[in-house]
Image (tube, rainbow, N blue to C red; front, side, top):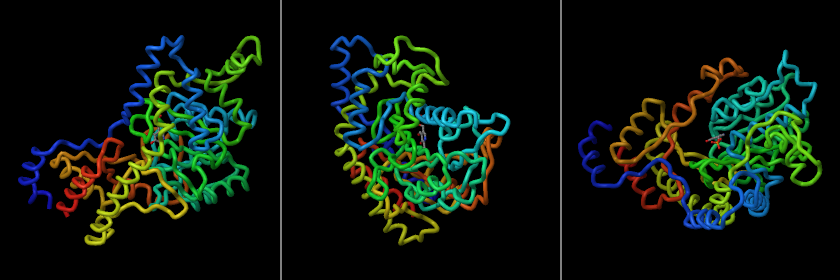
Length: 404
Ligand SMILES: Cc1ncc(COP(=O)(O)O)c(C=O)c1O
């Protein structure tokens, strides 16, 4: 199919500007805020100053999040969650027989690296192909006495049924942590997705719905984790207590990292958090345009050949990404290469971690892998970012329609 079209395709591609796969949000308000911050001669650019506190206040007031701690990345937030979990287990953390964390294999490496780094063992479970996230039944079947926590991922701002997973974790006395890197602004059963469970981690990387360049936040729903999370963010010290006048000098009291976000990054981020509604509306309109046009194609060619995403009724998603699923990896490579001839960049996503060299060393898959590998190999992400316009989405859809 692609071969027949190559000549015309190449000619067309040269006449149109390229559509990149992703671009960071660059609001004029963010740029102006950074100029104004720098020219006001701030006494410090480092972390945990007024800009950080303003972002944290916006995460609470605009999104309804609990106890937000701004961090240098989602990876940092996940490491803080792992450290707070380790502190919570105390002497029950037996190095000779490490506690086990349940997680998906179809995820970014930071989800698992953060727990493996601090000595936890990983137990990968299968995904539900409809959400690309941990399958609820697979989580329930994988629990044994060594399991201390469940880590869920909200792929593309869509989740598994968090009410079910949360109720199960409460029943089994398991800690529930969300990798909500892609889920800012998304809801589940009408409640902010990141408010389920004990802790959740957001990302403000360049590719995310709101960006600080690099950045993230740990959201602490279970306040018993808050003191250890703050210690983890301040390199293992009680500096936060010192800054609040609660101790007269600060000391090394636990394990930690350098997880604060610079005030310059926080300044860039703040206008996007405050003005989130407009960002959200634009992204949803782009997502819906893809869905409306490509659903018609799916109906024409069949969903085994070309499948659009489906959003569970319990989710109000945040249009973080738009992907399609093709019959297999060969079909996916062919469409990606064809789109490239049209000046359109598309992208694969994660390679299942349980098959990665370090994934093999740090954990094992529980139950059957019915969907993780096959679904990962079918998935192709299409361009979706703030600077994209409906006319660009139409061009991507037209190229795909022509291909089929
Ligand atoms: C699911 C998931 N978790 C964690 C991360 C890491 O985020 P960060 O780059 O902010 O550390 C990403 C990054 O894309 C991600 O997709």
